[in-house]
Image: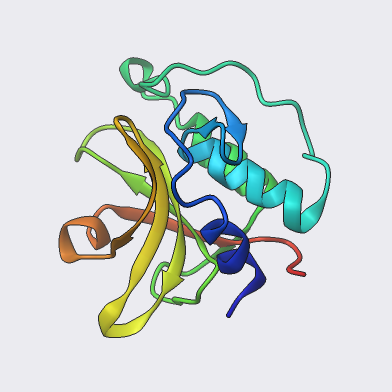
Length: 143
């Protein structure tokens, strides 16, 4: 199993808390990725500014995508591997504003994520989720 997946699974059950990134205490989808980064890669490469739950959607600003491109390694969306960071666009014309970590690939594909009203969970990467993936990244170093 990927060190990223093993680390992310250690966050399962962490309550959803907007802008938080503390295993067991609270996190949002970005906080989960930031927390895994800290455990795998060390210090964060930049200070994360405050952000709204809409991720600048009214302005059409792809803030989250740009940040992912700065610090993660982009790869083709079709090049699936465990430990990948997945970026989702939740609405057709909305900004990409949800993150998850691929836990399993293939027919039983799953991903680990946090979303409002739910603790960090591992969900099936079903077709409704798959069609929302707009980018795939890998951590710059793993274990």
